[in-house]
Image (cartoon, rainbow, N blue to C red; front, top):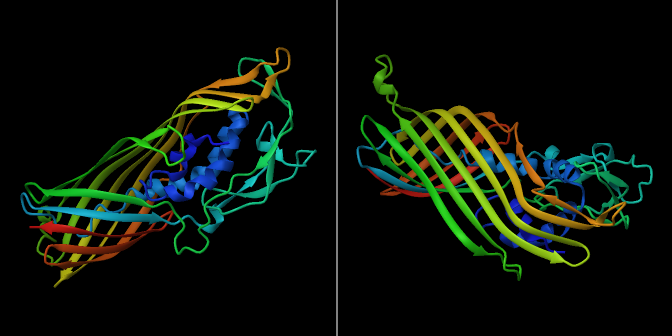
Length: 367
């Protein structure tokens, strides 16, 4: 089965970097959509949440590599890759059939066995899941799984050999100097109607937008304005959205048509400090990330394995998924360094937060 509308969920906006690794993950993951909408929501929440938090917090990286603002009309163009590490304790989740209505481990006739299953970055598993029993739909109709079908529990991406296990969040931004030692920073990217490399006509799109203001506050405080340091306040907002139009049909098993979308939002507030030492700049910051993200599937999904006990009609659901992830907001502290060679800059920093993050990149700066 290839319900590839899950692809943008799996890549989670790492732009086009992760597309080669999604196919094997998607093959098993889409089978979850044979479950009831409540079970789908429960499973997706556990499976995707750590990666969502990793990506959304990664979006807060890369806004700065110095606390010194540009002169008026000075500018920089900077590319950064941020990876917020997902702790090993959150790469698996406990599957408990008591949390589900019609989903259990294969062969568990008492619906009482639990197992640690992988999240999106949890590696492979040999466990199989089983759909069983009757389901009462929101309209009161009763449906039943006709075949007691089992399927492979979704694998995750194996990141055990990587120094950081997270979803890369690449950023490209332009910074421009305004008046009163203030910089305006902009992130923007859009790609539409891109074809998936899966032999279908399904297409997807990506939208990225970000804006930040960095202001030198030291100039307004008499007691510190002459210190040989640069200090600034930064407030930034980033938004990522990916959508995919899908139209899939496997006769007698499953059909789906509609649009899936994933969004991630991050607002960050930070106080920055830096010190220039010849071509080397040491910088740091403390602050807070406010994170929200969500997944939505609009459309119609028909499940022929789940049929009405009276009429025999297959179960049809409209707009089966619509939920948000909360709890990823976190305090943060960053330390890093920048090397400037003429107009070229190279930078790297490490951020201590709920999901610790490594950032590295390069740029061009003038004035």
